[in-house]
Every structure is written in structure tokens, then in C-alpha cells.
Amino acid sequence: MTARRRITNPALFICDIQEKFRPAIHEFPQVVKTAQKLLKASQILNIPVFATTQNKARLGETCAELGLDHPGGVQTLVHHDKTLFSMFTPEVRKGIASLNSPLSCVIVGIESHICVTQTALDLLHEGHKVYVIADGVSSCNKEEVPIALARLRSEGVTVTTSESWLYECVGDAGIEEFRQIIAVVKETHQSTKDVLQTLCKI
Image 1 (cartoon, rainbow, N blue to C red):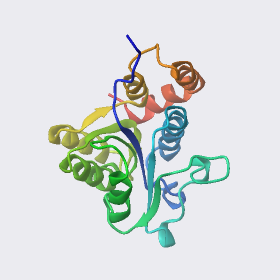
Image 2 (cartoon, rainbow, N blue to C red):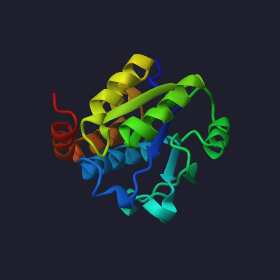
Image 3 (cartoon, rainbow, N blue to C red):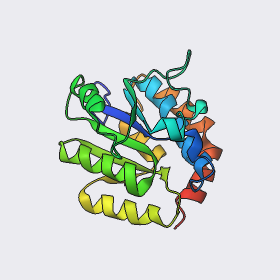
Image 4 (cartoon, rainbow, N blue to C red):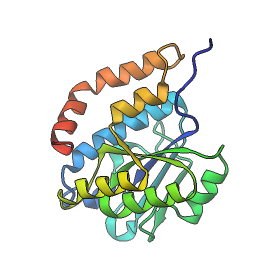
């Protein structure tokens, strides 16, 4: 039997990971690390990337270390500024319409209880499968995060970790890209452990 991926039509959503949020968001560098890992995987697996900024005139560009739309970096399908809290803007809608639907949308970014939550709910309402990555989201007040994730679970969103999602996305060690994905997992082993210990404390 031919090896095939477990998750169909995946798309990565990078929500408002902006420079001016750096000093305000709880464990901001850890969110960036998880986003970087998923961006590497998106290139290997040819997963389309949607990214937004929230009012970048005031809050700045997407963090440079993500390398979005830079020469040699990750080219996004949509990289758009917004005033809506949800990423589900007309520009993002148009990008989604250009892909096979429904999507399996995986979300990282900030803030958990505002833009991430509203994005997840809008995508869910439109009939997409939605995953929120627990080691890839945060808020200014850390106490908001578990409350937001509990609410999203109750609404039908799948809350999981970046590593779990990567393995589920691949689904079969026989697929062509598996060795490259394993290389990403090994390369990020220590940072994944650090992020889980800070963002996903039980």
C-alpha cells in the first residue's frame, strides 16, 4: 500500500507574532521557536502559510527571525495586516478559496484568548478542521492561556502540541519526506523540551 499523509489539506496560520509584542507576551521567545519549527516543516511538506500582523503601524512587523517572505525564507500565501482580531479577513478568505477545502488549519501565535481564539472559531464555523498548538500560543497574562485552550476544546478545536501534530500530519514513516521531518524533530529536541516546560506546565 502506498504511504500517505494522515492529515489532508493542512495549512499553517501564524497569528500576529510581531516585534513590539516581544516584551509583553508571556514566554514570547518560546512561541517564536515553535513557529520556526512548524515553518521548517511547512517547507518540507509544501504546506501553505497564512500570516497576519495586527495594526503593524503601531505594533510592528512580523518578527524577522521567522523569515517570512524574505529572500531564502518562507514564502507565504497571504501575509496581511489587519485591524480585525480574527485572521479570517477578506484577504485570508480569498487565499483559502484558492486551496482544496476543507482545510486542516494549524494555528500558532498570539494572543491565545483574543486573536487566536477568534481565528479558530471563525475557521471552525466555516467547516475547517482546526488545531491550536499549545506550545505555540501565549498571551500577555499567562493565566489567560489555559482558559482560552479549555474554551477552544469545548468548541470543537483540537488542542495539541507541535510534535504531536507533525507526526499526525505525516502519519506514515514510509512517506518520502519523513526523514526530513525527523531531522527537524531532532534538531529542535531541546528547544521543544524547553518550550513544553514553560508554556505547557501541568
